[in-house]
Image (cartoon, rainbow, N blue to C red):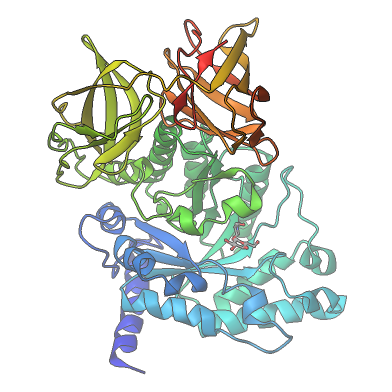
Amino acid sequence: MSPQRQFGRACALAAGLLLIAAGLGGAPAMADPAPGSLGALAAAKGKFFGSATDNPELSDAPYVQILTTEFGQITVGNTMKWQYTEPARGQFNYSQADTIVNLAQSNGQLVRGHTLVWHNQLPSWVNSVPNNELLGVMRNHITHEATHFRGKVIHWDVVNEAFEENGTRRQTVFQQKIGDSYIAEAFRAARAADPGAKLYYNDYNIEGINAKSDAVYNMVRSFLQQGIPIDGVGMQAHLILGQVPSSLQQNIQRFADLGLDVAITELDIRMNLPRDTAKDMQQADDYRRVVNACLAVTRCVGITVWDYTDKYSWIPSVFPGQGAALPYDENFNKKPAYHAIANALGATPDTTPPSTPGTPSASGITSSTASLMWTASTDNVGVAGYNIYRRQGTTDTLLTQSNANSTTLTGLTPNTQYQIVVRARDAANNLSATSGAVTFTTLPSAGGSCRVAYRASNWGGGGGFTAEVSITNTGPTAINGWSLVWTFGNGQRVSYMWNASYTQPAATVTATNASYNGSIGANGGTQSFGFNGTFSGGNPNPTAFALNGTNCTIA
Ligand code: 9MR
């Protein structure tokens, strides 16, 4: 064994002893994440903050850099599961899981073992084991795997997801062939193989008080009464935006009051895509609630996110149209959720705004577009982007946002004077002071080879509307592929569009043809599309439309 591995082993053992002494079952005694990281902040509160990971991701160097410095704990996301560790009866393989465990140990990170007995990711041979042999097969699997990782994992999710939503037992092969007792037998086998690991029952939708968490509660209480070895309950916490259960803290507390530890084991908070600022803020608040609930209960020993970046989240493949569930985006930028977690864990909030951006310069002015550039801002943490506003009198209206210190404005009205100012923002949403203003005037309309008819009707209840838009090509040349740009004057938002796709970063909307209606014949050809939108107050029609950068007349 290399000195490095010996050291890691000694750390894990020492951690185990300290944990037993402290009765916390998961405090990161030897974990050494970077100062100020989520792992370090949590450790200062006597908890761990960790991430799941998976083998394919380990070839992504920027990913590994954050994984190994930001988190005090790692969960092996897949490769400790039965499918990987005993793919054929009696043939064991830990090579992939070992890779992750070694990485964690060499970075001083704790490891949660996940999972010994689960109906999913179970190799098919297990289903055909004769009834009277399955208990032996299950015990053998647990014994072999828990022995292999003895001293290297702080926790085992011994049994995963054994209950239905209504609190009845899930009819897995183990339940059907062994009966109710299989869970207790699994815990006994795990304790015998690794007496130092804390043994957890792990499940989803048991974060709040409900029929399923009641069933788990009754089971673990009876285990304690009967002396069946169990140390903790893992609440997976695959949550939905805005739906953190209000009883979360109370529920954690009731398990703690039984004398059990609780871990939040697979936290993510998914939203309907695309992300926007309001959803990000809600998500930050949701993450804050989860962290605060765990902090409020001494026996809540730590929190693990189910991977840390949207790049590697399981959500979009299982819930189409949903995602953005994790504290880092797919480019490893920290999202508001990250800062909410850090602040809840006691980080000093960033209240320093970026420096004031330079006055923009305008170039490439047409009848409907203009390119802007300005000197970049600096920030103590990092500039997250810029807000670009139109100034009219004393009012600055947000036109668009840009990640870089330049942007191209589209959908401008011909022959119109614009005053533009810029503010920088950081990830904590601190806004800089406002830059100086640039003033320019768009060119007169090219004369127009298009005509737009825009018909909006508001719904009875108010707040929502449907719009039908038709574009006529009044010029002598057929159009192949089009984008129509307009700017809403009163904060209206498109919520759903048909016969075109759209982007709407701020007030300006760009609608682009669908695959089947990109051609508009010369001399009067027409295409149309429609959308539903929302408004508050009034719903004035846009006053200008630009087709492929050229202003149209309005019918
Ligand atoms: O993240 C895991 C994903 O890569 C697998 O395809 C999936 C297979 O079921 O399992 C995912 O992890 C699950 C975890 O093991 C148990 N709780 C639910 C997790 C998300 O499905």
